[in-house]
Image 1 (cartoon, rainbow, N blue to C red):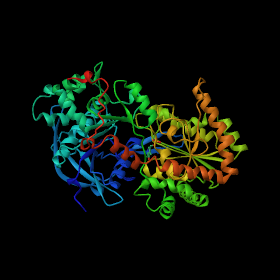
Image 2 (cartoon, rainbow, N blue to C red):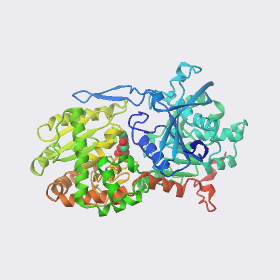
Image 3 (tube, rainbow, N blue to C red):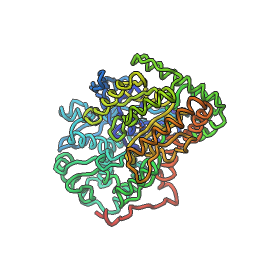
Image 4 (spheres, helix red, strand yellow):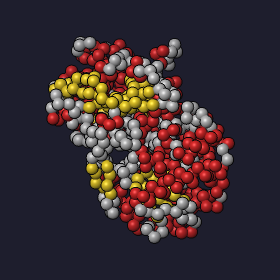
Length: 583
Ligand SMILES: *Cc1c(COP(=O)(O)O)cnc(C)c1O
């Protein structure tokens, strides 16, 4: 096996990365996307390395009492048993103190044997102060000071660590969201070789833009990292703060790290066509491109479907494009594979919760990080209507899962409301909320249910990826036309949309569409026209599984963003108003 550290030419920075089900260094979609990106990069033998933080406390274990009240405990995991310790050390300055970081390596193995190394930074060293030792301990924990210190560790510490490991002057640095933006400061400092940041020129910024790629994931302004100026001064010091000011990263004394990413990147993208459109409205001074997310096919396909694809489409793991040929797989084989995946899910639900689900009943899945805009309780908008549909048209059973961030009280209240509905509908609709949603449950749920429900408030879902996992497993989506779904939706062919009627009250028009389609289209097809339903399942794989994967996504990053300096005809797409960023 070649030593992977020799060929690294690009680095991917992410605040969270979902490496494996038993490594709790992620909280949701952002981390899963990062992990899937690296898995596909390893498959494609891309010369990539990744940087994130270690999070010894993990992202928490979720406990739910009988009323749906969530409590949390730290997840115990042992980095030393799954990661390789490295001798390299990086030294950075936070709040005027020297902070030393070490790194642990995780190797992502590709289908052909290539490796993408992931460096997890760790500040728990005896030479650091007590507070500094905790900087890399908790994912999305602590106050804004803690968060800013973490982002210094990730961005500045990450560049320093890569250099200590011999990965210098890489062709590209990819920021997965604004949490990683401070890496640009480290790159500038290294270019300045000890000269003051006050001397940074337009040329230096051009140098930076040739290297940097920024992916934004959040369609709401409040979702972008923001820090008060006084805090920035304390944590970063005057020189760096002055530069951030010159670069126009402050609005009304609040630092917005998305602006830093934007100002420093030659390529900026949103994560779905619709999301890029929304982002361009939010940031009209920039060219925001679109590269729609995907999922890693091998990771998110159930064992039953893996066997099926191995039999019919042997090369699908190496080249996901071949999944298009799923269109020729006999319907009964799709139905059989799905029945096996469903059995696995129902068995695990029974083992964990005791609930006995019916293998023949329409099983709807809804599992994602609990955030109010995702509207976990939307299906219960009119419980009487839902009851009546289940009663008259055919049985419905529903599986929920999802963690609320420990400090997100409205999200916790949402879980509570789902539990209330579970109790209220008890004798008509079987509903279960499985605790501790993570990669393991996501694999079982997205492959084992019959219909994947998605009800975000449009346009708040930047992309969403769980519906793509479902598609990989022949599970159709029933979704509000948000995120990736306008690109993947062909009505009645790959799933159904929860239509939004123009000029009518949003909530009520979505509600009407949801109940009407369940009652008159989806349930009747599921129960009475089994082959038609299986055709929708098969189309989901052939049309959406073959496209909404991270292999296609990465190929788009390579076509449009990565390694462009190697090419003669680099499409120069400067920010629309370069004058604005003159320093
Ligand atoms: C895929 C995944 C997500 C993302 O789901 P969305 O549909 O994008 O909200 C979140 N958490 C876990 C554990 C996942 O596997």
